[in-house]
Image 1 (cartoon, helix red, strand yellow):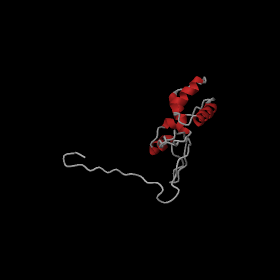
Image 2 (cartoon, rainbow, N blue to C red):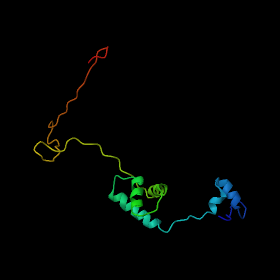
Image 3 (tube, one colour):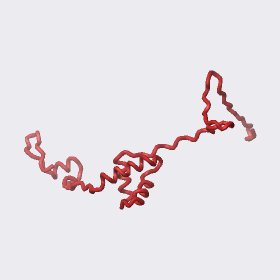
Image 4 (cartoon, rainbow, N blue to C red):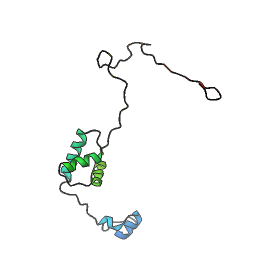
Length: 131
């Protein structure tokens, strides 16, 4: 962003002024991003592990990567994890018993109207708190 052509009669705007107007530090214009040469392989492996271990977060994935011989920091893995948009899925709620007494494993669904009923217990209490 060395010099920017202006449209209000000025030929150029200095870097100093442009950065002041944008509210950013001038050093951001000079710093080159350093991407390590192993980052593509690391991201690929991290994604593979996250896919095969669906409930593992970045901390456990970091441990697995270290066991494989990667020299990685958990903060680096967290940064890459967020950049790649990886998330640990929410835990599914526990369902009721899935099997029947005969050993079959079929969850019964209502077959017709009024096939499945539920009980709703309502308790009332007296003014002194007794049921």
